Length: 158
Ligand code: FES
Ligand code: FES
Image (cartoon, rainbow, N blue to C red; front, side, top):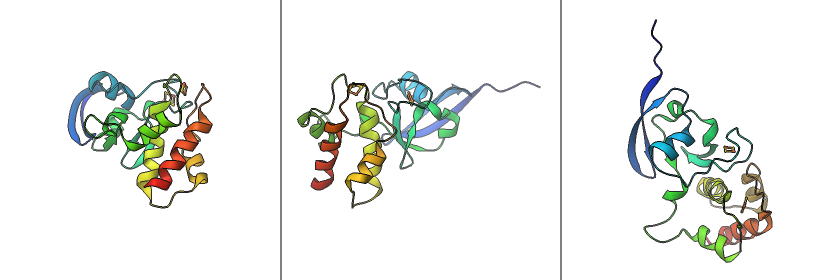
C-alpha cells in the first residue's frame, strides 16, 4: 500500500480562494506563512500554548499551529492581513496604537484575531467577554492592560 503524504487543499483566505499542495502533517500556520506568504500570523510556541498564531476560521478563533491544513480544507480563514481595509489600518489596530497596546508586537496578531472573532460573533460585548476572548493569548511584554483598554474602547465605538 502506498501512503498518500501530499494533498491539495483549497480554502478562502481573506476573501480570496487559495490552493496549495501540502503534506498531510502541514499545519494551517505553516500553510499561511510558507505557502501563502501571510507572515502576519506568528509562530511562538508552535504547540497550542501562546496564541500568537490565532486566526479566525469559519467565524471561530483557532490556534493555527494546532490545525492541520487538510482539516482547514474548504474553510474560510481571516488573518491579520485581512483586517485592514486597503492601505488603512482597521479601527481596532488604530486603537492598539493609541493605547500603546504592544511593545515587540509579536503577540499582537493573536490578540487582534481573537478579538475580531469575538466582535464578529455578536453586537453586545462586555469587558468580561473581552477578557475571556483573549485568555488564550499570552503577551510576554505585559501589554495586557492596554490591550483590554483598546478593546473596551472599540466595543463602545462599534
Ligand atoms: S504558536 Fe500556536 S499557540 Fe503558540
Ligand atoms: S507586545 Fe511583545 S509579546 Fe506582546
